[in-house]
Amino acid sequence: MASEEIILEASGLTKEFKGFIAVKNVNLRVKRHTIHALIGPNGAGKTTCFNLLTHFLTPTAGQIHFNGRNITGSSPAAIARMGLARSFQISAVFPHLSVRENVRVALQRKLGISFQFWRSESVLARLDARAMELVAAVGLADFAEAQAVDLPYGRKRALEIATTLALEPEMMLLDEPMAGLGQEDIKRIAALIRTVARDRTVLMVEHNMSVVADLSDTITVLARGEVLAEGPYATVSKHPAVIEAYVGTGHG
Image 1 (cartoon, helix red, strand yellow):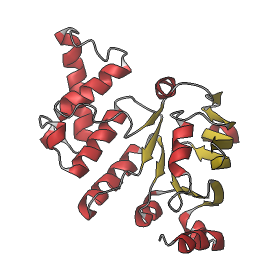
Image 2 (cartoon, rainbow, N blue to C red):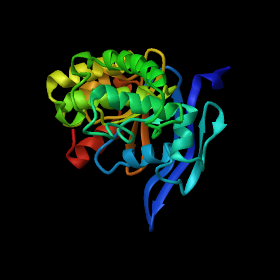
Image 3 (spheres, rainbow, N blue to C red):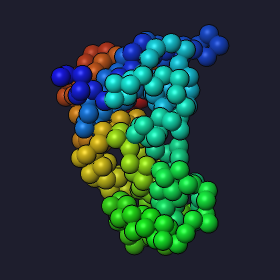
């Protein structure tokens, strides 16, 4: 069935702030096991849209379905437990814990024992083994005992992805994963996102167009809170309304 291909669907998604409509009647369908990018000039409503999908903001109108289940009105924590996790919201929470300990805390959350630091050593030892697997998976094995606060910026991004992976999400939402990164880090995080997407779905807001072109299966372009165009990069990048939206606002 075609519907089984769609993991996340938003219909008529609208958010109004005191008369200002930030997101207007957005319809979004994300296919399972794809990388889907949400792009648009500054002020297009991308982050608001992200916040609506994970219910950090409540929609004024519209519905959101995840895995065929209506999640409209659910709490962000409940949505994360269902398998839809947003990176960079829950991440690198403890700057003075090590990389390994940060990932272990995220694993404890998954088990619902986040703040029971008195858990038996055997439970924590089991979590340590999984934490180290995740640390290695994001290329941080050499930094496992480093404090999060001391990590270079790009490595912090990798840690944020590791803490999100600890929740074992079916789908990850990444909010500008390349923001502030140098060229080397961009390559590393792009490769990490591609690896992560092998057995899960990724929706990302991203400004770096070369990354979007390289990684994305589908791109949705927002402008002034509305969907302007959707499709693969080759099609979307040539769309006259998309070119106008970017050129017209002075953002490339």
